[in-house]
Image (cartoon, rainbow, N blue to C red; front, side):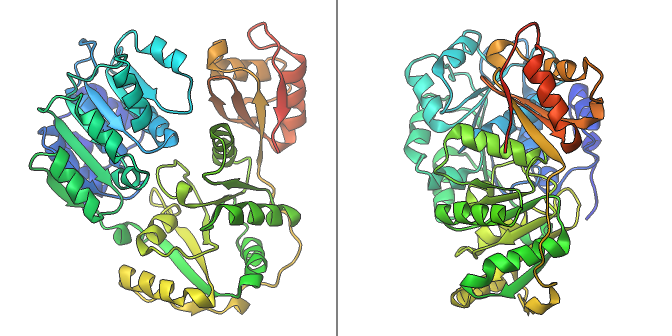
Length: 460
């Protein structure tokens, strides 16, 4: 496929500079197909998987038409989850870095109303949020969207599946009829067509082939009895020694059980599923994304809308009943041009699901012999980093630079031993190399950050 440069588009110089700084060398297929019509102000209905570059596509288009000198909300983006909303907002901020005074605000449930109300005293240019919390602000008249020029429904199929259709209908009542409406969906059920008919006007319809974008992924299928799955997972991990592995289960309780079983084999694993509190999900995703845990065992909540990049291995502990979900699962690896490996364990009772996947992919799914894997043997798979939790965050005016400065002030720790730093409202997390974790924890517990002592502990 011919690569197309962003410089071929009529974009503001500030955006082109930001694109270059982010090393976005060429447009992805969804960007190349959608951006020309987005920049013309057309409505768009796009089917594209997570990781295809769709967020940058709509972010670039709405920033290109943004009037940063006009202090009213000009773009509204609806997302199914807080995690996705925060990732979308962060991508917009990165692309808007060269445009002065652009205010992007996230409004999501699971967060206190007070700070959001304070942030809304000056209208943000761009609002990203979940339908329930957005509607609450609209009903309270703390958010004004009567001059919105662009509405984006991101992961629309998932919002429908989560029962947000009534909220979306109610939000639409507050919006101007004359606007650009962009609808992005990873799958295309009949309800998406109905949603488009209701909210869009003569949209451009584009589809990015998920199977084509997964062409750099090697798939393996192994037939296994239910009681032998844990042993086979151990053999897979021992054979490939991946730095990061995402394992999918269909049931929440199975995630917890498999996580515990892996810990019993001295393998650092975390679970992610819908029964967890929001702070637990935040902490889990931070630990996994900053390389403080080698294995994440998750339900399909992690398959879409979560920024988990650089995965070496995806394992389907259970096959999904939906072949489209299977494609999205394996699409978590092999991203950004990298090669990836996806392994599926197939129970005898799941052979019909395997046939559906083969039919959907248009390719065979041969079962590989399990004896090609080495026999199970004790081994350790420890992550390279450790996460330290600090009992202060944005409310305490802490910034990543404050934590970095506190850790390096004594010169006992080199800057290259410090990984990702995440500062949330009330808590902060910093990734430290395993070899420096004890020293870093002592520095934080005994020292001060911006003249104040904070509690610090090491996360398991």
